[in-house]
Length: 206
Ligand SMILES: [Zn+2]
Picture 1 (cartoon, rainbow, N blue to C red):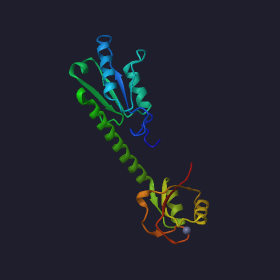
Picture 2 (picture 1 turned 30 degrees about the horizontal axis):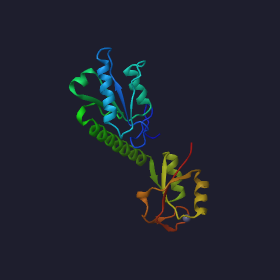
Picture 3 (picture 1 turned 135 degrees about the vertical axis):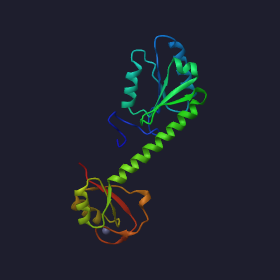
Picture 4 (picture 1 turned 120 degrees about the horizontal axis):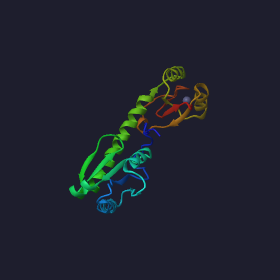
């Protein structure tokens, strides 16, 4: 959910059921040639999760919108001119722009673009979480910071159920995740002051 935008879903390539969709650009002339090339592309891309949408009842423009809304990370367009030039057009869902790639290197290019999209999404999501996260060392500070800016509060926690219950009760938040990268930094439990290296995110459910 964190990756969506005003055009709908945006699924990370690693989890997307369809990683790339091939959309033929048909003009009513040379259509068979284009469709043949699209089928060839589909078999070239075997091993990736690729769909060919050759439904003749929908326009290419309608399909573009549809697959953007569904969050498919990469669109592959092939039209008559592309067939002539032995190329395909790749359009990543992240708005970073079209790429014209040689048909012979299609599989490498699509694979690289999926990796690039994946890395970009991870970076953006980390920045978003970082921006939403504050730290607190006392319950008072926790409450003040959460009231000032909703989001995650990162705290040290001794691991006891009692301290967890106290914090939940006092702040009306619940534990969310124990970030792997943040562990093993010594601090004091936000509730009982005991030394601990366990760090945990809290947030409120709205
Ligand atoms: Zn404690």
